[in-house]
Image (cartoon, rainbow, N blue to C red; front, side, top):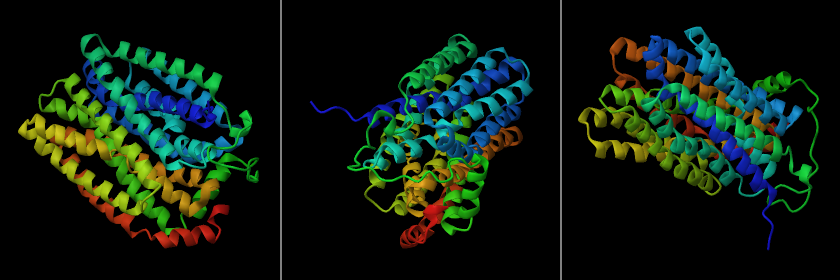
Length: 424
């Protein structure tokens, strides 16, 4: 019987690690109302804490990518999961809004950074020679899997008991994952005496730069990347991606549904239902990114997302479950489907060695967009007593993103790689 390649075990551990980090971040939407009701905090202040978290874990991405090559994958995962666990524990004892900002904005933001930014491309690039797009698709979809399984559970716990037992569940899962990482995670295929999946013979790897300061490595990657037009097109489209997904839907969708009379558990279940299609759509997107022009994939993803976001306020206003289901299917298929093609284009332009750091910076723009939408959505609700304008504007921005990605010239990407941007 043929043995399963250890790369798939690494993929599995990474998959479940991202699930835990993903459910912590996506749970912010179900905690807005409980925090508001128990502590009397202004919704915009609560949204600010979640916005800081999104921005911080995004901007940390390129530095995390540099640190991965300096101190290793396993240590980084252990430290990050321990930091995330610490933030979850402190949440139970907080009672001031400034504590929420420190705990969720900074501690949880830093703890989730590795898992939700550069870990997927790093594992795919270092543990897989073949099926890289599929590996990225599976890992990216793992955030949706956690949401799918646990978000309705967290909402039910909050509705029947309180938000603290829901935090306790996330605490237990984080601790279990910390133990699994410690026992089974490895830094490189070399640690278990194998080659990356699909590689037939060893390739000489350069150790140049591994002893450099990670901050220097990260900024050197940025300084070179900003000279390339494609970097700005990808960064701009990913800013809009973050704005229209985790920032707006992830943070405010549940509250938006509640404002139309939809119960908390039902709203969380709808968001969770998106996770089913997100899991399918993102995995399929990884498969497609190995086979089709990634620019056109992104063009259609952003265009369809624009239509679905503009459609949502109409569906809620009509009170039609059928319309909500239609939105859930189309938006869910599209939610994180943009990630595999974006990573693929980054790798084509900047090469395997440096694409992790460059993608980290691109993802920082994603989270900057998420932070803008998370805080901006709270402000829009405060002034207009509705989120409708936020969703309409997000749809318009998605149309703009579809234009950004189609401008990228495929042949220019190949030329850039040949001209030496792999040596950034």
